[in-house]
Length: 614
Image (cartoon, rainbow, N blue to C red; front, side):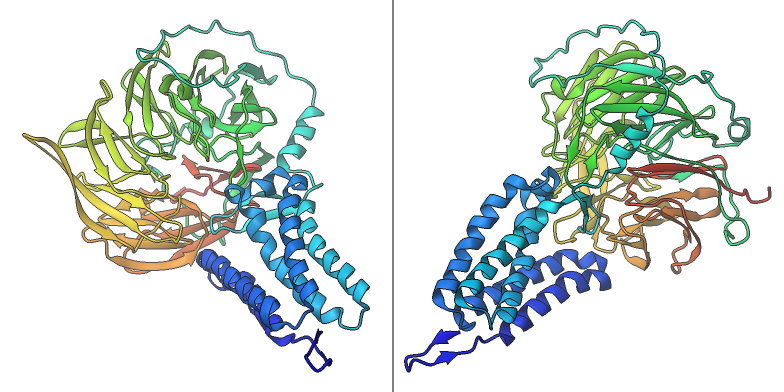
């Protein structure tokens, strides 16, 4: 209440504050429920609501001036002091902005609720309650931690004292009998790089742990099938296309049959598969892990560990890249920059390098995410926006490419344009291409973006499809033609389409059409002009592969549900769906023969698919 010039007490004016905070909370939580892609707009709406509450509080609430302005001072002090007691995931979330933004709606609610319930209290009790409400709104966030964010920007909150899936996994494996340390192979010492190295080497103490299992466990059923091998990220050509496999699509009568399910350490790695063994990367406490499992039983075969840990509050802990298989070796690139060449049957270290130090690159905000690419006698990784090539046999540096400009979370991609093989890389500044022999720049295409994670897609006539996005969910896909003339290579735009705007989801190309994600919704556009053919089905920020022989998309949603969708331009048609995993799922699925492999940051599973005609 406020005292008028006549000495009369005026009651608090509550209705504007009640209306403002009600609308604020409805926008913040209601809009994403209606449209998951509109989370950013809901957040902006919540800030507008906070401004409305502030204006009401400061000028129209009739709260006594000492309480009115004193409350704002207490808020400033409390917000500044609370980060000292927050869980690191909250304090560092959203690039350090999570608490500052998230506490605002709670503080608005605290002011309005206080104004409503404290009207009959004595002055002293009112002021104590006001301070208590503000402190409670801030201190509440000290009780929480976050397990990251979904692709649409929702924080995955949990109680601070609850165990993370990784901690539960470590407790489980810690109770198992210790496994023997494998005989260490003599690591070859590569030659020093031709250019000076800068930056501190990440601490790496490689160790190989072998489970008490045969070196190669039999999986004759899977190996006998055509296309049963999957050498690395998104398949043999990094295009997400599965050949030689046709499956039954009526999952009501012939659903996928689970072969096994087991917990896995965090990370966004996919799988490489060969000879009945699968390979993936994960985080186990203070160790970054390359692990080999039996494909049909899920039992561990060997584990290689490096003393390194990457964590960031949005995506969580663990490696981002996927191992690559080549001639009996596994090449794996970790989130902190460690590149390993391991024996595929035993996990013994052949050689190891720190590509971050070699290339003079800093670990980007979301970690190194490149999957190694083998071309001829070299293996190539992207150290942020710079390519680094190493000798397959010895690990000696062969060349370092030009700085692509800005961070890159994409992987090197082998393409052939005008009959010339070249390595393309997407980065924040656009796209670059280098010669595999020496890493020299062939061409560069400028199309700045907030960040780039996806792979380029290649059209039937050799053009490239690249994507760009911004914080507002804008931009989309662009087709560029790269021609070779007397003056060199020339990339130029053919079209830009807003009909397909993926966040970090790769697309597939089939028969003149592109299938991928437009935010959280699947969509199809034409290769010829970028026109959208259809949009349908909500799968979050999921991933997909194309079963080319039967024109079917196998989609793994962000919520861990599998779906089969017709890869046809006429309309969106979902053929089947099936629950596969629990929890946020950003990892790419793999189809190797009749075995489907899926994982996320807490579990992985294998399913047997019924083959058509089988």
